Every structure is written in structure tokens, then in C-alpha cells.
Amino acid sequence: MSGPDVHLLSVGTALPGPPVTNADLARRFGMDPLWEQWVDTFIGTTSRHLSIDLDSGVPKAELADLGERAGRIALVDAGVKAGDIDLVVMGTSTPDRLMPTTANVVADRLGIDQVASYQLQSGCSGAVQALDVARRLLDGDRFRTALVLGGDVVARFYDTSQDLRKLPPAQLVNFVLFGDGAGAAVLSTDPVPGSAILRTTATRLVGLGSAPGATLEWFGPNDRHSNRPPATEDYKAIEERVPTMAREVLGEILSSLSWNGEDIDYLLPPQLSGRMTEKVMALLGLPSATEVSCVAETGNNGNALVFFQLERAFDKMVRGERAVGVAIESSKWIRSGFALEGI
Amino acid sequence: MLIDEFLRILRDDLGLYLSDTDVDLELRDVAGWDSVHLLSLCTLLERRTGRELSLPEVLTAPTLASIYHLAVR
Image 1: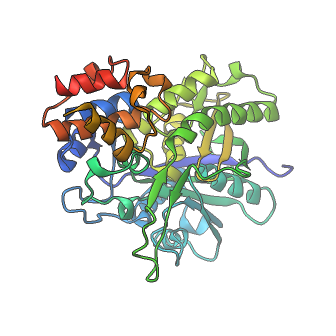
Image 2: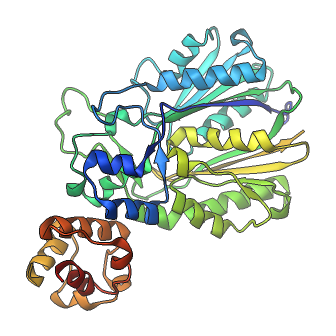
Image 3: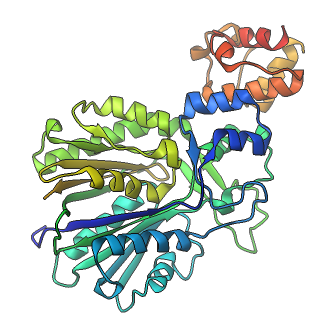
């Protein structure tokens, strides 16, 4: 990129309610202590936040509600007014509806208008894809300040009438892995004290000929009674491919910036589950970098995850410190990453 | 519960393609076996026998046959 540096000014996040623990899920779905022990041992996610009332199954919040909250926090923290935003980019796999886009609903609620706006249909790499699109569009003279959003709400996929004991494995894991949330960041070509430079962003589709590692369906009047499962997870393929893909991205990011592994102060690894993140960290092998993870407490909230990690890293970063983030999307296999440097 | 019923659970409910003697294989050598199948199997066994299993104890079982013996003891 030849234009001005793109700065991260602020990060905001929003969760739909208090944490739902494994014990809460066990109680709700009539699962026994063995099930809880299994989740602790093999998933390593202790809680998640859900936008439905677990007892009644009634939705409590839409993605636009969470995106609005996260966006408002990011705008206030950046000291930026709605009228200063000239670009909105949002990534999500679970928009509230196909039209209007959730990106535009959030913009409307925040008083943002007369801007370019884009919504990416995306999985766990979506936050990085949104950062990438925003950074590249800011690399010119058309735009100066972007609101970047990402989030997911799995309420419509969370069937509280389901008997978990009868679910096939590919659907069972979804009940413990996922959660809801949204995040937002303000990027600008104008730095402010405490901002960080977004040195690079990279995304690459690498799924040629590969079966999807995850699927999410949507249904209309003609196929609403289809037998297709609404959500599936090929956890075996994910376990096998994600650590290697993460290592490849990290190598690409470091190489593109001529940084060494020892130069990294904070590493934001992929957040599939607590245990998977441990495995990925072991393979990435950057013992001098501080791990910044959230999934064990937030659950895997998809397009929001990177913002929760960014929020934690951005709070700590001081001048000259470097952070690298990696996100992997298993639906059709996208690897992505980014790098930040405190100024 | 007889071993035939145990094999039926493995084949029909878990979808594993097993011969009768595969229950004596080390778990890592059982085709398709993973931690999610372990959870599904334990849940089905508890429901079938009406008795709770302890995960730490199940994790010490080296074969499917030894999981069966924990469930029916």
C-alpha cells in the first residue's frame, strides 16, 4: 500500500447477557456430570453468552442490537462522531435478515449516513476480512475514517427443544462451542494519542476442492421443512487443518513485514475452542509473545472474536509493541491475519 | 446389557464400521473413533443401563471392551 498509514483508534465489544456456564447448559438440557466433564476436558470452553433466554428459547437480542452497542463504544472511545465516519464494513455469518443488511441497520441506529457501506458474508475470518477491506479502501483519497464491525448471533440455530443425547456428533459440538457477540473498531488515516498502526492485513481462500468444514443453512417458505441440518461442524477436519493453516498465516505476516518471531509482543491466535487454541499456540511456538485469547470465556462468537482479542491487546499495547492476529475460517477454508504496531 | 447390544450402539447409533473383534483394539486404532464418539457412547450407555459413568474412569479404558465392562459392572 502506498497511501497513508491506517490507524486503529478504538475497539468496542458487546455481549448479550451474563455468561452461560457448562453447568447451566447441563441443567437446561438434562445432561449429567460426565457431559460437563467432557466439555471441560475436550472443548475447554467454560462459558458463552447467548442472545436467547435459555429456559424459554425466546430471543433476547439481534445482531444489530449488539453491533449498535459495540459501535457506539468504539465511536466514543475514538472521540469520533457519527458524521466523521465515511466508510462502514461489517462481517457476519448470521445477519439478522438477508435485507436490509445488518451493517446498514447498525449504521442507521448510530446516525451514520451518506457513506459507503459493505457487509461481508463471512465466517471466523470475517473480522480480518472486514479490517482488510477497510484498510485497503482507506489507502486512497476517498475515505478517512471507517467503522469496522463483526459479530454473530446463533439464536435461530440454538434449538432449546433439542435432546442433546440424540444429536449426531457433528451437530452436538455446536451447542457448546458457540456463543453470541459483536465487536467494532474505528480505523482512521488520522492518528490520535495511543493509536496503533494496522501494518498489514491478509486473507486467502485456500479451499480449492475441499469439502466445507462448517455449514450454516438458511431456509425460506419452499424449503423450511428440509431435512438439511441447520448447522454442522466437521470437527475432525478442523482439528487437522487449522493449526497448520495458522502457522502458514503467521509465517506470511512475519515475512511480509520482515519481522521475526521474537519481535512479537502479543499473539492473537484462532479461537475455535479453549483446547484448540492451546494446540494452535503450541504449534505456533512463539514463547516470548503474550497470548491474547478470549474464547474460553466468550465462547466462539465467530466474527466478533477478533474484536474481543483486539480489545484486550489494544488495552495493553504501548509504543513500539507489536501484535499479530490469526483467524481461520473452516467453512470453505480461508486463512487470514493482521499485524499492529503501537505508536 | 450384552456385548451384542453394545456393538449395535457402536454401529447403528454412532455410525462406526466395526467388526466384532474391533472392541479389543486400542482406541487410537479404532477407525473413526474420537472424543465426540466417546461422549456419545457414554451418554447412550448411561441411558441404556440407568447408571452414571465417571469420565476420569472412562478415560483410563484402553479399549471399547473395557468401556463396556465399566458400563455393565
